[in-house]
Length: 178
Image (cartoon, rainbow, N blue to C red; front, side, top):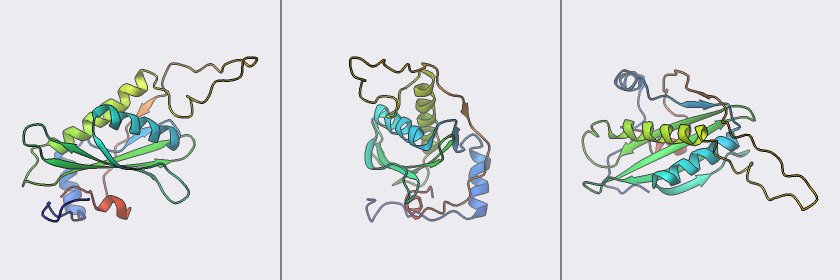
C-alpha cells in the first residue's frame, strides 16, 4: 500500500490524458496474439526478471482481468515507485495495460515512461526467445507416450495505437499516474 505522505493519485481527466498522449505517444497498451492466460504468465515472468517486487499477482478469471501490482526501488535515491499491470483478453488475443507512478517528487523526468518501455521490451524479448508459458511447461508424459513438440518461435507482437482513457478498473485507479 502507498504511504499516506505519498503523492496523491487522481484519476486523469480527458485533458490530462491528451497531454500524456502528446508527451509519450509511444506508450500504449501492448496487444499479443496469445491468450490472456499466456500473456499474464509472460508478463509475470518479465516482472520477475526485472527484479521488481511483486505485491499482488492475480491471474485473469471470471471476476475480472489479470492484475499485477509491483514496486520498483530507484537505485540512486531509493525512492519506491508503483507499477500496475492489467491483462485482459480472450483465448486468442490479449492486451497489456501498464501504469507506473512515482510516490514522491514533483516530476519523474520520464522515469515512469522508461519503466513501461523496459517492461514491454522484456516481454518482447521473452516472446522472441520463445519463452514457454505455464501452459507449455506441463508435466511430462508417461514413458510410453510421446512428448508434445513445442514450437520455438513466438507469435507475432502487435502494438496498436490507442488513447488511454481513464481506467474504469478501481484497482488500477490507486496506481494511475498523477
